[in-house]
Amino acid sequence: MSFKHGIYISEVDTSIVAPVESDSAVVVAIGTAPINLGDDPTAVTNVPILCETYAEAVAALGYSTDWDSYTLCEFMYSHFELYAVQPIVFINVLDPTSHIKTVSESSVTLSSGSATLSDLGIMLDTVVVKLTAAGQALTSGTDYTTAFDDDGYLVIAYISGGAITSESATILVSYTKLDSLQVTSSDIIGGVDTSTGAYTGMELINQVFPKLRLVPTLICAPYWSTKPGVAAVMEAKAASINGIFKAMALVDIPTDTVTKYSDAPAWKEDNNYTYARQVVCWPKVKLDDYVFHMSTQLAGLIALLDSDNDDIPYESPSNKSLQMDSMVLDDGTEVTLGMEEANYLNGQGITTALNFIGGWKLWGNRTGVYPSSTDPKDAFISIRRMFDWQGNEFIQTYWSKVDKPVNRVLIEALLDAENIRLNGLASRGYILGGRMEFTTADNSTTDLESGIINFHTYITPPTPAEEIVNTLEYDTDYLSTLFGSSS
Image (cartoon, rainbow, N blue to C red; front, side, top):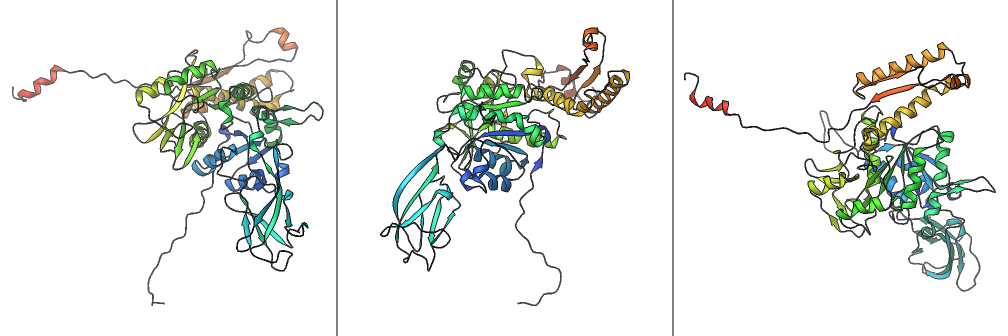
């Protein structure tokens, strides 16, 4: 080692950035996961699973790059790795007791003492290994070991001194594997078992707040939201969670059948993607070799934007950067949209992406209800989210007042507290103004004697500056500058 004298610097690899938290963009993502790779495959089906880090999600649900089979992995990667936001509540519907396929005994030859099976989704506790000659079942941990490689494939390796005597032996292997192709829209939609009372699929959204104390505000279902039946239920759930909370459903127009931008509006109308609590996206987006449904990245973008704005969803996600390098169809065909084409989609209530100034941006401020409705509280994504946020916040803030005596003290307490809160939002620019009133017109004698008190809140979130116009005019007065000051 050379002699050193002085000050020296060394570097280490950057640590994983901790996800930022956004309480105003709590995502519930419904789909399928490679649960055979998780810590407890039998405990994560049709259960709300709260994850705040990528590592936590992988440990609970597993991870695979086969996003077509395991749709939640797409969301997991985008939200945690690309946008570094949390939390996510995952609902996996892939059931290891029903969505399975039995693989009969087949011969496998070891190479240098191990063999990698070609199937994904193998349930480890169902693997049976036998010697070809004797047909006897071998013992895991004594005769062989099993482990999944980084791609989710099962590796079987012999143990020296066990029943497998050669590094090139042929063994017989059988097992049961997950079969995601058996999952249908009905599994995603879910329901309530009349005999057991168990909830499945999207019905579990109603369990998120009671179990986790988080109010769902964004409902996503990568791939499945292209199914009109699923999208309709997503919107219905978003409109009434636990009978009181409100959310938004982020949905996609399919890119296997809708391959031209000009066909997207008709598909949207024909399949009823026309609600105020739907953000309708087309087409897919791509980053390197990864292809995402646009709604997946939109959820990450919204959560990141909210976290930058004190968890208040007053700003539109439009014209904010996406993590992408191209737009594509289902078959990988690249889609190129100019300003005119992108604006045409926006004018039909469809959100897209645009590479115009400053790189790839989300492009679109309108919900699915536009253009059939132009009411700002329904037509603009940011205003719709602000109304939902205001309502959800009011419920949680004043829930403790329910069942208090109806008297002037209670009424003034709510009025004072809420008007102070609204004034604070206005002073910070999150709303243009707001007030809450309690009037005789809103409170009949019948309501009051029944214990019903009605408040009326007026609130004006800012609209996005969707169109900025600057008029240019040739002013002949400035021709006088040609003659100089002396003339």
